[in-house]
Amino acid sequence: MALAPLILRRSLALPLLFVLSNLFAGAGARADEVPLRISGFATLGYVHSNESQADYSASALNPGTAGATKAWSPDVDSRVGVQADWQLNPQWSVVVQLVAERSLQNGYAPQLEWANLKYRVSPELDLRLGRIALPLLLVGDYRKAGYALPWVRPPVELYGSIPITNSDGIDANYRWASGEITHITQLFYGHADVPFKPQARAKAQAMTGLSHSATMGPLSVRLSAMTTRVSANLAPELFSGLQQSGSAGMLLEQRYALDNARTGTVALGVSYDTCDWFLTGEAASMSSHSFLGRRSAAYLSGGVRLGDWTPYLGYASARPDTPTYDAGLPLAGLDPVAQARNVQLNAGLNYLLSSIPYQHSVMAGGRWDVASNTALKLQYERLMPVTGTRGTLIHTQPGFRAGRAIGVFSVALDLVF
Image 1 (cartoon, rainbow, N blue to C red):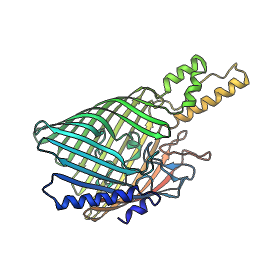
Image 2 (image 1 turned 45 degrees about the vertical axis):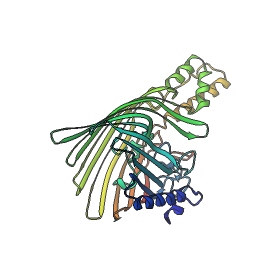
Image 3 (image 1 turned 90 degrees about the horizontal axis):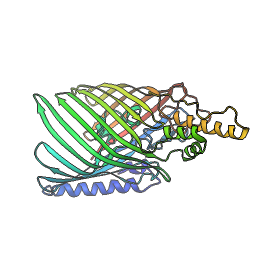
Image 4 (image 1 turned 90 degrees about the vertical axis):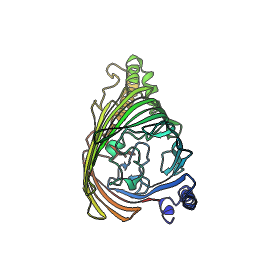
């Protein structure tokens, strides 16, 4: 309980959520015969970046604030989650999960992460309706529960590229076996509506995908694919200006605007965990008919468990597979006013293109399992945004220079209850 004010002194949301979760957990413990289980997780994290001209961020939906904004920021990783699992009868069950974390728009106000109704058709087949975890990545089902991860956070090069974590819709999960291999095949369809700044939202429509997981002993593999149509009213002044700049501008607007843009993702993750050591790697390819273009991201990480201690290392990269520069509108033969206007629009377009992460990083860290439900982690990352882009950094200042190493130090206390 004493951790909550440290996470957010200026908000009552997190302390209130802690209080409610403990009350509910106590009630559940006193009534084992009631098919309702309350559980939760929490992370108290602080991040320091030695880059004073930009902020470190875990994803496009997190405000970051570590670096240029604050010397030490709790905003990147600190969160609290409470989950209720209610078994109505042998066939029907309900799950609801609330998460309070720093968002771009609502501070630490709790948000509904999951809320779905499940029907067990048979021991092998489940159907769900409601808000469901997006099953694209290897740790996608529990990426916000820091205690379940070996690292402070999943590598931002990959997981920051796919910041949407749930969808509102339906899915079907089919469990089957072939020899010693256990399979889970999941089909899903839905949509997501995410506010990312005042009067600006990102919408993903007709999210249609397939995820297949296979497990054999210590080896786990997940292959996923999804297609959707994404809209986000990013840089409205830029695209409005391009529309008003003749046929050349209209072509640029149609090519780069994130407006009902067909977007696809394919991801492969592999994990080998013997309990004494682990090796995990993932790679994803993303394409969009917008300024996002084609991108790829990957990481490889491994560690050794020495009693309660787990030292680990990792390498990650993100890169665009399409150009991040466009000559833009023509300048030759224009009067000075029109030329200046086109120069400004071209600069805005290329600033947007430079936001595509192009970055390499290495990390080293350690986890100490203090108790059966508590872990303390320290992690150091050395980021290298490639010249001409700002990597995964945000809030870049005029003095920011890419192409040089940036050090990021993180400390996190993870709990489950």
